[in-house]
Amino acid sequence: MVNAARVFLLSTALIGCTSRAAPVLNVAPDSPGDSFVPRASAQSFCPGERFSIKTPPLSSEPYVELTVGGRRGPFLIDYGATASSVEKGLLANGDGPVTLAGPELPGLPERNRFEVYDRNVVQQGVGDQLGVIGTDLLSKMVVEMRFENANDEHLVVSERCDTDGLGARGFWRFDQKGFFSANPVGQSRANVPVLYIDFQNGWSGNAIGTRTWAQIDPGYGDAVWPYSVDINDAYYAMLIAANLPLVEVASTTVEDCEKVARTDLVYVLPGHLLRIEAPDGAAMYRHSSVYLVRKGKGSGECGGIATIGEPAAQLGSSFLRVLGRMIFDPAREAVWILPTIFREQVPGTD
Image (cartoon, rainbow, N blue to C red; front, top):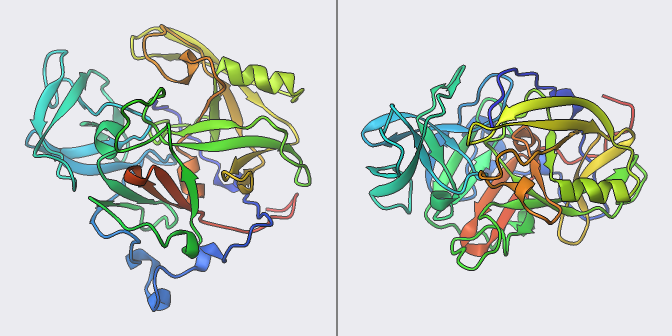
């Protein structure tokens, strides 16, 4: 999803430590001897081909320059999309899927299948979107995504990567079994990577017990409501049952993929923090200011979390920057995260 208005409030990002032992991640060198390497040329953990990321002003959707069908231009790297696609009139005509040469990413064949959509997405600072690379292709490669340095935002794409030592270097491993895999045959859910979320009451509070999974969606431009967490009706019901003080602050009308309008209600949770949790329940990241967007079903034909019965959520693209370095590792059914900042922030301070 792409929003036109852009209001990005980075100052609201708050990171919390837990009792889990961890290095000072924001200064950890990439490898022995890297301490003197400028950040802009820091080495990657995975070998591969490097692509600079372009983002719209005050937003975080990651675009890279790729060549498909003989035309080079910006493609959205979107782990929230299960099918790669190109724009009608720019790279294809008609409404059916097409097979085109490219993109030139490690691990892919020379030609690949793309859906055709008429979206007409133009992003300031990016240009005319030529298409979207979804998990049908992204699940065939390892992608290291870095947003930690504003002067050097990039991807490193590898056909394979040895991730055995990442835990010892401060990365947190998020198991993706049943959610995101290089071989998703038999999965009951969409092939989209997830993290786990819960809430806590104030900085001293414990987890409420409303834990659920949240899709990582780089294509969800949430600059209108920075740090948006989309929730479905089942998760909304779970939050209400836990007596969380949801306060409606706005509503927004959007069109789904079938051009059917739906109205999404926007809530805040005063006094409560969002937790992104490791499998053992430890809070890797805590955020004191988020918006909960109750996602409507719309036409019901476009899929997504709104159409499923179990509690589910979806993280907006603004979370990419505060999560820092991420390695998407579909062959091992894992997402690895090295947070940009790892510190306890005193409540009430900047």
